[in-house]
Length: 392
Image 1 (cartoon, one colour):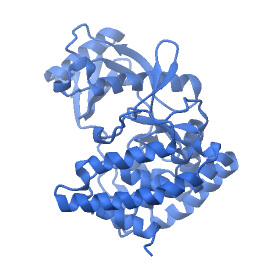
Image 2 (spheres, helix red, strand yellow):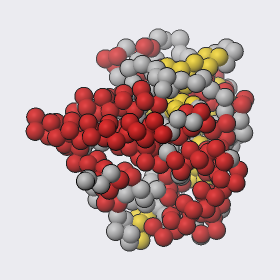
Image 3 (cartoon, rainbow, N blue to C red):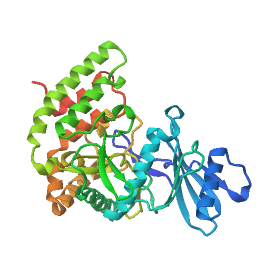
Image 4 (tube, one colour):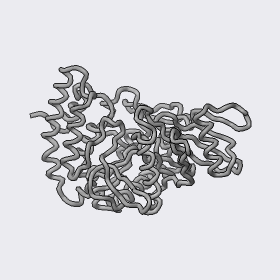
């Protein structure tokens, strides 16, 4: 694969190695032995589908084991299995619960939408209770957006805005329970329920389901206040608590202004929709939205958003970058594409556009509060607040 194009925090264009498509490849003809975890996976999939696997590529092996497999007949699938923390207990771990929630959600999305999400081909539950389940899904076409966006001509980037709008607007109109948390689809029957929000990074997860925007925001502030991310010593923590108290004071009247039912209506959101979980072709058409492990139902004013690839605002502002962040669209193109995206959604769904525009400051604050990164003394959060809420 050719080099990918990125922009650094200074707005300078550079070429870098793309994100690897695979971390390890195994070929049946090589006769190389597989370590136990992958050997068991291969055996389970071959037995369940009555197909011979001739190639296996490891796509991820951290929180989940994810591999792409190719069969003798040329068909390709993706196989995924949770890798729970052994201390939690295999079948009762949080990661296994997320695994089943994601499977049921994907089935439901296939039934109620035309979103390009993976199709479930098989679910394999090993007889050995010590083993984790597997899901076999169709391998979706396209490349991760991170690898291809930078080299797209501007016309393709415009098309990418239309593709993003199609995804976000479909999610915006799905009927979901009107409470704030993580969506749970119960099988059989597809009964929808809300459970406490499962955030990326368990420290941010909610303790309960929320009924109002105010409760959700207050819960995020309290979770941040109690976390170790605001400081490791007393002075830093005290400063961080002062910053969070100031933020709470500023957000209260904002939430009060955002009181219209159309802004408070709860909407399904993909919480991990970064540029590695969006697949696209080089023409700017989204070919797949993957990795639904983290999702939430939240008020429309928090759900409506700009595509991540054109974000230079809030926590994505280069002034807050640690030095190793990169953007796949230039600052100049991002400004124009942002205007285009806003016009697209305004023309197609006025309520979405209203939520997008009116909720921008609140969404940025929520991103700061739910970010898994460390911010000693909330220094970066305070810098952002000083630009949005200048001191008297």
